[in-house]
Image (cartoon, rainbow, N blue to C red; front, side, top):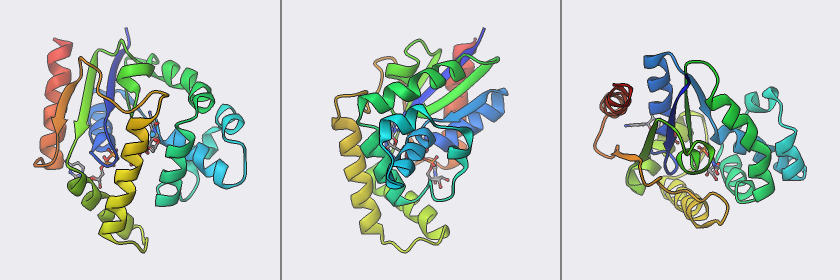
Amino acid sequence: MAFTVAIDGPAAAGKGTIARSVAAHFGFSHLDTGLLYRATGARMLDGEDPAPAAWALVPEDLERDGLRSAAVAEAASVVAAMPEVRAGLLAFQRRFARLGDGAVLDGRDIGTVICPEAEVKLFVTATPETRAARRFAELRAAGAETTLAEVLADVQARDARDAGRDAAPLMAAPDAVHIDTTALGIDEAVAAAVAVVERARG
Ligand code: CDP
Ligand code: CDP
């Protein structure tokens, strides 16, 4: 029986880091669902109509350069508010969640819409300032010319759009376990998540 771990939360909260480590710890597969929206946003920036682009995504779309840029993050959150885009990406995510022994998916609506029956649901948060500082460090390391204030404004605008939309808004499932990573190092955050999964596996 497949075991699903659903991880949601706002930008740069540490979802991906926790998801990758939990997947490695338990030998589960991992899907970064944000990449699907980023790839669709990138195709919109190329001039394509987003909904047909979402339905037509191919694996190579997820390996494009520049998917982690601020411009693509913003485009991702614009296309993510479109119900036809979300519909185009739904079946693949649901199928992925049920493949093999176990799967970890991270995004915004995994515990609420994609996998409401997930065995474990985590809602990962941190203060906006902490998240912006983390994302700023990543963008600078990748060579982007930006400021902390600009990254904070981008992250807050994206969170507001993601939480305020009608289609699958960012929110915690009622049965999600909350992990606030503000004061946690990566190892501590991962250990907290692993402990929740271990408890659920009994
Ligand atoms: O997936 P999400 O956007 O939620 O965040 P992430 O990509 O996992 O983490 C964003 C950045 O914060 C990465 O550079 C992580 O190494 C860092 N991070 C951290 O410093 N402390 C944590 N407890 C978790 C992540
Ligand atoms: O890494 P970070 O948390 O900054 O963003 P991401 O997970 O790559 O997601 C980029 C954007 O895709 C988000 O701001 C959301 O608008 C959208 N998204 C979504 O709507 N639903 C998901 N399951 C995953 C991402």
